[in-house]
Structures are given as structure tokens and as C-alpha cells.
Length: 578
Image (cartoon, rainbow, N blue to C red; front, top):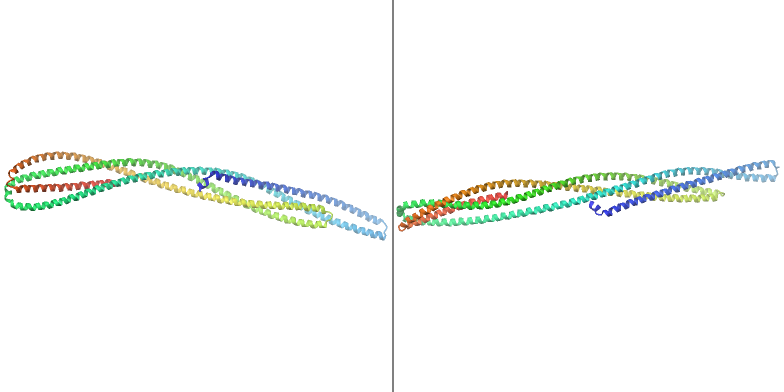
């Protein structure tokens, strides 16, 4: 929502300024219209006062004429009394008296009517003056209120401009933070891909070791099969030996002493050969273990260096994420403050809306009063028309008054239309204020949603920090275990070196013994060649014994190789599990 609102700041701000300027222009026009209506009411009051002055002057004239008529009547009565009474004169006098009395009655009725009109006009003047003063005060108060509203609107516009600038800055900072977080996510993805590649290489090594193990197992199976074949051959040869032994029982008695010595020397030689082969196999296995362990040590060292580098990176990422968390908390506090300010503005707008509705009700009451005045003036016009029909002498003046009153009625109608238009404008303003309230509510909802999004982001960052801490602890534990395993491997290497030295010493001693045995064997061969013609079976028996010894040595060597292979497999599996 914030992004949509502030994506075009150059477009949104002029719209708000234009709307506020239009409102100010409307208020200024209304103030000018109210001032013009005040001037019209003042002119109307001045015209009524002029009409009063004219009526008072006419009343004075009529009073003077009435006094003159009374003087003439009294004079005529005296003359009538003084003059002699004749029938004609009496008739004429009576006719004159009647005419004069009728004129007097008409004059009295006109005078009374004029007094009543004067009183009514005075009352109307008082009422119009009171209404004019009250309307003038009300309009002045309204002008002051409009000026205060203009000032408030200007201050609110400035506040909204400042708020818009602050919100722009906040949005820019949030966008930069989002870019930083995206970069961090890319870095973490790259680290994960690197770790996956390492795991893939380790799995390839594991597969290769499994293949080598399977090949060794196949070779062991082949050797076992060969051993079985050799055992079958030995069994067949044993049967042949039994047959030959039955034939050579007599000859064995003669050669028992030599045979015993040969057997003893052969046994010693075989034992020495077995020892030599065992030591050689041990040396080979130890050398293989040494190469494997050196490779594993180098791999562990590289892993330790990579893990230390990753721990440093994770520590840097933790520091950066903590800084981000502090900045996000500050932003949360700022947004909460802005929400409180917007709530206050919403309350003030609601109060202003209530005040405008009250003002609308007052304007409607004023309109009703104006309707009543118009009806009253129409009734007065009807009365004046009836009076114009009665009075023939003041037709011209009454026509002028009627024209003036018709003008006043037109002006009142215009004022009524203006007041109605003003009421409609106030209703439009109320609707606009309601729309502003709804827009403020929408901004509040958007701000609350943004606050929730920031809180969710905070939670996700905290979970990521916890994950980084857990991974760091796991890496530290792995490093400690690797250090321990390295120490153990170094100890084992030292032991293996010592065993190698001892095995080499044993090999030298066994080689010396073998040389001695070879010398003894040559002597025995020389002795046996002399007796070869006598006992061919003895040679076969010696060959069989030698084959038995070789088979036994091969079996023992195979067992030793099985043991070393099992140990190497167990050690390699332990290193892989670590």
C-alpha cells in the first residue's frame, strides 16, 4: 500500500495541494458572498428607515390638514350660527356639513389607518433590525470560523506534507534494508550450494571406498575358493601318502633321526617365514592406514579452515542482523507514534464533522426562518394590495413601495437560493470530510498491515538468527570433536611408527635366522642326496609337509588380512560418521 501511495510522489502531492487550494477558494467565495448579503441587508434596513421617515412626514402633513379642517369646520359652524336660517341655506349647509363630516370621517379613518401602518412598520423595522443585527453577528462569527478553518487546513496541509516526506524516507530505508536482506539470502544460498558440493564429494568418496571394499571381499572369496581346492588336493595327497606310508614303514625306521632333525628345522623355518610374512603384511597394512589417515587429516584440516571461515561469516551476519533488528525496532516505534498521531487526527476530523453537521442543522433552521419571513412578506404584500385598492390618494407611493418590496422579495429569494447553495456546499464538504475520514482509515489499516508485516519479518529474522546460532554451535562442536579425533589420530600414528620400527627390527632378526636356516638346509640337502636313492618316498613326504606348512601360512596370512581389513573398515566408518 505504501509503495502504491508513494510510488509517484510528484503526482500525489499536487493533487492534495489542488484539493486544499480548491477548498480555500470555495471558503473565500462563501465569505465574499456572506459579506455581500450583509451589505444587502444593511441597504434594506436603510430603505426601511427612509420609508419610515417619509411616512412620518406624511403623517405630520395629514395631522396639519386635519387641524385645518377642524378649524374650517368650527369657523363654518360659527358662520352658520351667525347667518340667518333660510330653507335653502339650511339645506345647503346641511349638505355641506354632511360632506364635511364624511370627509372628516374619511380623514379620521385614513389617519387611523396610517397610524396603524406606522406602528406596524415600526414593529417590522424593529424586527428587521434585530434580525439584521443577529444575522450580521452570525455572519461575522461564521466568517471568523471560516478563517480559523482556513488556518487549520493550511496547518494540516503542512503537517501532511511533513508526514509524507517522513513516510518517503521510511520507505526508502525499508527498500534499502530489503535489498541488503536479499543480498544476504543470496550469500547464504551460495554457502549452502558450496556445502552441498562438499557433501556430494564426500558421498563420491564413500562410494569409492565401498567399491574398494567390495573388490577386496571378492578377492577374499577367490582366495577362500583356492584354499578349498588346495585342501581337496591335500586330502588326495594325504590318501596317497597313506598308501605310500604303508609301503615305507620299514624305511622310516632307518631315517627317523634325520627326519626328526629335518622336521624340526622345517618347522623353525616355517615359523620364521610365517613371522616374516605377518610382519610384511602388517607393514603394508600400516602403510596403507598411514596414507589413509594422512589423507583424512588433510581433509579434516581443510574442513576446519572452511568451518572457521563459515563461523566468521556467520558471526558477521549475526552482527549485521542484530543491527537490522535494532533499526527495525526503531522503525516499529516510529510507526506506532505515527499511528497514534493519525488516530488523533481522525478524532479531530470526527469532531469537525460533528461541528459541520450542527452547522448544517443551524443553516436549515435559518432556511426555515427565511421561508417564514417570505410567507410573512407575501401576506404583507396581500395586505398592501388590499390597502392600495382602498386608498386612491397614495396609489403611486404604494406602487413604489410594492415595487421595492418585490425587489426585496427577489433579493430574499436570491438570498434563500444562496443559502440553499451554501447548505448544499456544506453537505458536499461533509461528504468530502467523510471521504477524508475513510481515506485516513484506509491509511491506518495499511499502516497496521505494514506493522504486522514488519513484525513477521522481525520474527523470521529472529528465527534465522537462532538457526545461525544453532549452526554455529554445531560447527563449534564439530570442530572440537575433530580436534579430539586429530589428537587421537596423531597418538595412533605415533604408536604405528613405533610398531613399524619394532617390526623392521624383527624383520632384520628373522632375515638373519632365515640365512642360518638356509645354511642348515643346504647341509641337510647334502645329507639327503646321499640317501635319495634309498628313500624316494621320504622326498615326497617332505614335499607334502612343506605344502602343508605353506597352506597353513597362507591361511594365517588370510586371517591376518581379514582382521586388518575389518579394522580399516571400522576406522573409516567411524571417521565418516564423525
